[in-house]
Image (cartoon, rainbow, N blue to C red; front, side):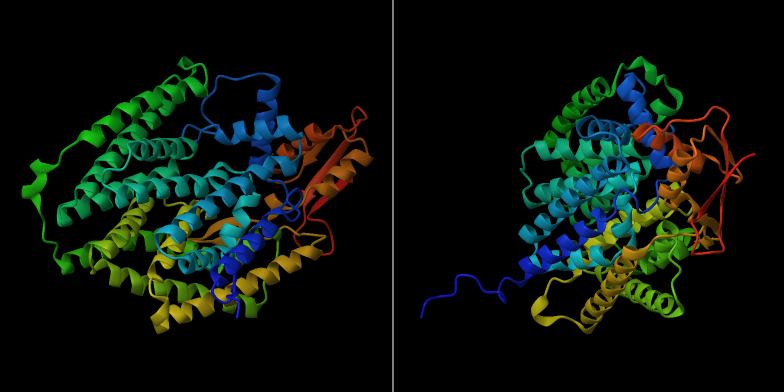
Length: 514
């Protein structure tokens, strides 16, 4: 009998990963140019890229001092290669998120197991936030997963071999600074890593933990100086981003040398025997501010249905809402139990728990405002942590099995929503609360196609926008003028307003102004 060259049963992780990756890609690509509707901030990036194409700029900061121009630059590149369109505005987010997910899967596959890569993809594929965010061209959505995947790769290489090539130290420093330049919210990661590896070194005295703690301490200093420079300094002193990054790279090369040659013998006397009750008390203290300011909002992220409401004006029925609430509760319970278990285990489990708690604590210091995109990094961290907890597939605990069933049900709900999107023709503007009572609306994501068709057909020259935030209509209209300019009749005006009562009508109502 000839041996089987390829067994479906033996290679099910490969097929499972392939299917889930294809599913993610289909969700991200489907109606990328139209759904969700073009947001005002997306349009700002598109217009900024068009402006840079027409006239190069020396500006280094983005919409504000704590964001960079990476989104504008990658959009400019896409427009130069493929033309100006909403699809090309958003395609970089799809590409970079897919690349980041692939890198993480490769790290899990090679260093843990193929089955844990499947668990990671299962969590990712059922997450409304991770499904929806790549389709919106914001700097956080475009780069967070990619930068996190590269940083994860570098850290794993440094942990595997204490004598790893210095290039991995440089990459860790560079990505920490670059990610924080893109958006300051990313800097919570190196701060949490500094704390986690510092605690690990003091307790377990592994040289590599001290090296990594020093590495991320330096990166935190670099990020702080960078933030101060962009807030108070004259960024016009630097001609362009390449010169800035070159200068930063030279500094990081010097820091790489310091970290690679640094000795920690003088800290040997600082060995700490950690009291478990004290650790529990500190962990509880760190968790309270996060639960108070962000607990409800992050629960909504895990539930997912409000994210679909925000981006697609989809109102969920009671059954879906209850099901999503059950799913989010199950995930929270699983995370709480596993974090408690890992917190009082050996070094390999202690460090991930300390990192997560440190990140939660740092995140609460960064912002008390609820915005779903700010929880993208935390969702990714929990996806990795959940994959990490499935380290023994031959003897899965009841809790692990229950989570798999829960994620499978959540994936089915996500698939149901994607099927509903096949028939989305009209959207109404919905207003709802998120987190600690912050008001959110789906109006900013309503499809702009019917509006643009109306303006084009009637040769509209100017708009009278009857809502309190005209920016979210004006910016998309200005961008669509760049995509496909339409002839106008001088003085022709249109009155524009949102409607929130009839799902059978467009969410933006248009009238000719007499």
